[in-house]
Image (tube, rainbow, N blue to C red):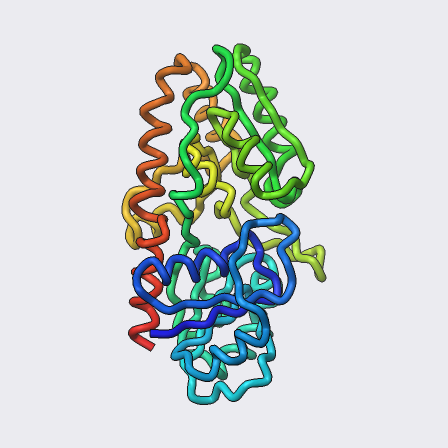
Length: 311
C-alpha cells in the first residue's frame, strides 16, 4: 500500500507523525506540507515535485486539517480521505463537510466533539506519539512537586481559570511550585520545559467561542497533542475530557487525570499535591506505559492502515 499525506499547515506535526506511524507498520507513506509549522515540530517531508510524482502511483491520498491541497495531478482513480481536527473544522463544519463529502470515502476525526458535524464515513483516530524520540523524565529538581502549564493558546486552554484554581489549591496545599509561561517556543524547547515538571495541567476549558460569530459557543473539553507529549515524558497529566466514556469503548483505559469542572480539578490537584513527591512515581510510570500501549507509532499505524483497507 502506498499513501500520500498532504498538508497546507501541519499543526502540531500530526501529518508527519501519521506518515511515520504508517511506515512503522509496513506502509509506503510519504508526507508533504506546503507551509512550515510555527511550532518548529521536527518534520520529515518530501518536496512538491516528489509529491506529484508519488501521487501518480499511490493508492490513498489523505488531506490534513480539513484543507485540500491542489496537486495539479489526476487523482480520480485514488482512494481519498480527509483528517478533521481543531477549530478550522469546528467553526466551518457545514461548508467543509460539503466540500469533502463529495470526494472522500473516509473522514478521520481527531477529537470526539467533532463527530456528527456533517462528515461522511467518520472514524476516530487520535494522533500518535513517537515514544522513541520522547523519553520519560521521571525525576525533577528539588523536594517540592512542580506543576507546569505552557499553553499554545492561553484563551483556548483556559489558562486564567487554571491560575485561579492553582491559587485556591495553595490555600490547602501550600508546599508546591507552579511554573507557567505563554511564550511560544520551538518544539524541542517546549519538551525541555515540560520535562522539568511533575504534574502538567493541559487545559480547563469546556467551550470555545466562535471566530466569526462571537455569540456562538462550541462544546470542546478535549485534550490535544501537548497532553500526549507530557504523558510520554512521564508526567502526571491533568486535563478535561468530555469524551472519556467514548474513549473507553474504543481505546480502553485512559491514563490521563480527568477533571471536567473547576471544582473537580481543584479537588484532583489537592489530592495529587498532598502526596509525597516520590509517591507520584508509580502514576508517572503508568501514564508513560499508557501512551506506549495506546498511542505509539505502531498502535496508531495499525489503526489507520485498517481504515484504509476498508476504503
